[in-house]
Length: 312
Ligand SMILES: Cc1cc2nc3c(=O)[nH]c(=O)nc-3n(C[C@H](O)[C@H](O)[C@H](O)COP(=O)(O)O)c2cc1C
Image (cartoon, rainbow, N blue to C red; front, side, top):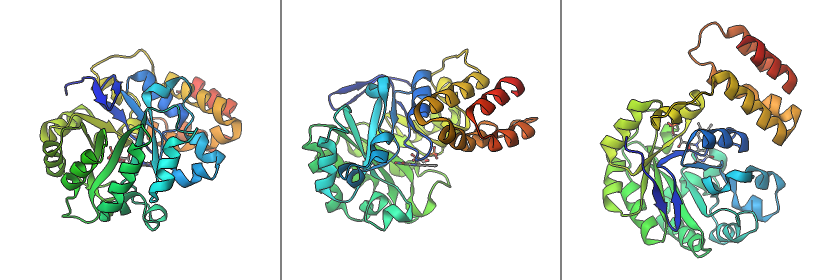
């Protein structure tokens, strides 16, 4: 695929391969590693606008980006335009130039509050939220799905609405809510939306290797792509997509990962949260069964580092 810089409102993004927001995965440590390998823009996981406005320290922590702030977009969610705009204007989002609005989350806890993908059924409400957030002066981007049920295609209508409401970019996850994360993306829906607007359109869904990325760009004509589970399964996916090389090995990457997590979250939380990454890191690899089990039961960062250093 053609890698090029992108303009998002008044901000220039170095390249058009973005790291998706993924709750429980794309924390500060993971984003930092992926930014260092080359992603153009990394997204925080979805953060509740109301949570921020009620002073939730946990919500604020999800936004921490340190030195990577210029390559990070904060993703917020909510159904109340007042809270969404207030969050954009708050001290928490002050350091971010780009703020993304989640209109795709399928999780019942979010959906039943009229948030995330529920907004795809209420275009007026979605429009109002975008317009209010734009008034904050931030570069507002929106992430949507192609609808609720198989056969739906709201992407074009939503992309036009988002553009007319002042959004600077739209990301389309080419699946409907009921599909969650499975099935082939709806390339045609993304292509139609791309052709209907002038703002950059980023295509997302099912990109696990270079061929998937080429296919996505060729079939949709999108301005860029967003990688998600593919970047967890293969942390070096971004390097392949950029046609670059890296001297960093998986062993070094994993050691850097656990070190960064420990620095930010402390020993206990880091060692527990690292467990879920090991299944991804070792997927399809042979001869690592025992190491994987040991890592998934390790109870300290020191133990994890010892295991990786000596057995990988
Ligand atoms: C564990 C997990 C957490 C996710 N969390 C978010 C989130 O916080 N915000 C969001 O917009 N999308 C979220 N997503 C969706 C991804 O950003 C992406 O749209 C989806 O995984 C499709 O891309 P893929 O097929 O390449 O994985 C999440 C996906 C997964 C698997």
